[in-house]
Length: 202
Image 1 (cartoon, one colour):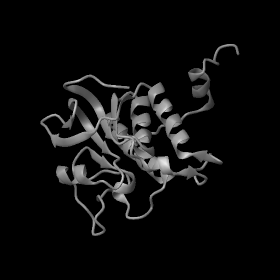
Image 2: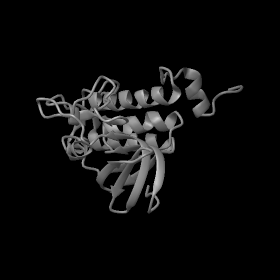
Image 3: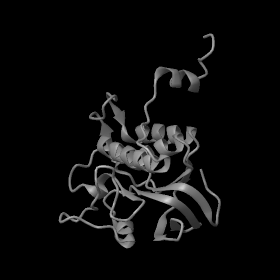
């Protein structure tokens, strides 16, 4: 979906729409944080066939990506397909993200741009001796409220399922900070029944 031109405020901006980016966006939006994703559709998933993703016996990477997008969209993620982020800078209240179509602002930024680490470098994120973005287990970078995920933070272990976990870890840390206590996104069968309208006499 296309966003509004000009300045737009979100709680979380995710740069990148592969497994890591969509996973982060799904968790934050699902739990009440307005989330915007910018996706140039250059994810390696288009070159993949998933045999090693737990819970999926066999699926084409592009088909998996379409399902992931639909899932994020169903929770109301504002997805800007084909819109490239050209710069990010810190402001007094968070971050300003610049694109070809305008500026956007957010309190948190999740970087999910694969092996392209230019935005992390421009923000002043620390790097390791292996020349990957230095993060902790929650995907926090050295810059407050900036998270890096997936291949940005790993020299070799580039797997969709690892990237999705990185995105979820970033999202849960953001939610923990927002709530002021450890946050767990743990669904039960009744939640699924509510989503699909199966509660109440059926």
